[in-house]
Image (cartoon, rainbow, N blue to C red; front, top):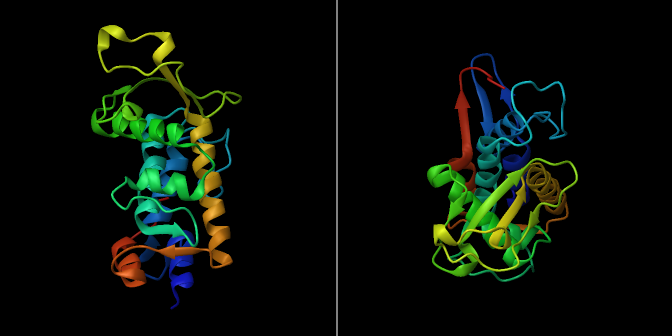
Length: 217
């Protein structure tokens, strides 16, 4: 198996069933879970009005998408792409490699991940100004993915205001991750993605491939 084949297996091996077991990539399992929780078609990622389980503004579904970004940034880089500090979060690396968001927008999305995943809140006080935000989230079909404040919030609760409020559209954020995933798969077909795990393709397959007794999605 080549590196390209291993990446393709990781990104697209949804479910392979035998008589007793189901084999799947953890990436695909997580992507389907994120889609299910955010009211999307679990196979395509398209918004699906028949999905009564989730909704487009789901915080839990958004955490799923953000976890996928962490995994992408920890596993892959764009061949001949920008150089990103290896110590940066996987989310930051994924968005810098595979999206068109600028550094301030990427920092805000990373801060939202911290807010949601660490204590299910709408504020994050980071080690630098770019990671300190208080958020308003919506799931508008038209609003942009992110609207940055006109001034940075200083992390003091009493100083929260509309002028230092960061707005993030969770529906658009889900769309952004779906587009990134589709682009990643396409780039891999032309051999423009490389594995950055220390153990290479062997680690990718061993670490993120799973077996279960029964298909659950």
